[in-house]
Image 1 (cartoon, one colour):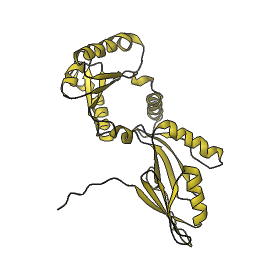
Image 2: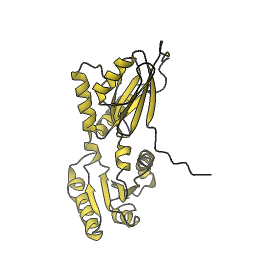
Image 3: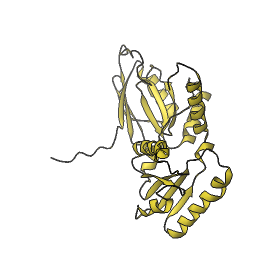
Length: 261
């Protein structure tokens, strides 16, 4: 049997009541171009390598009640967060009713809106899509302090596992500063052929001796040993507003009895 190779979901079809109105909406708001157009019963638009069919109907199919964490929708992928914000501002300036930009747990950012017939749309940047295009030779390392208590590392192991699920194209490893193995250098040695290592310090603050002195020294020593590898040291994760927001939400939920933990 011939192997089936999938490209991905690149086509969607939506009902509409007024074909000309919907064509104007998708062309003016999102820059889609007509691909095949029928005056009466069907039209297809293209954007990049994705295709959207518009099918006029006398009555729209009832959308039904919203279920789950978000409604069924058509998603428009954008190349970076800046594009999400730029498109959000463009649509607002044109009088389109758009929702606020939301940051999701996997690092994606996006917002919802509706087309003229009430079809739910989401304009979104998904980091996995961008990383998967340039992931060969990359490794992500979560650099933690370490402890002699074996249970200490369990929360960080769960974070690493979630990252492997969200971004399967990039290996994600834990490394520790001294009280625990593996070290940063031993993790890099596990990946022959690696060309780029992103080091994410799992620390709440970018201040203090560890963040300002010890971690940069560890990365510098690793760079001297692995001269063919480019090391990228990121800021302490606690400095990221998304992490701060997550802590705030967790404290509020735990601080009020009866709230989900």
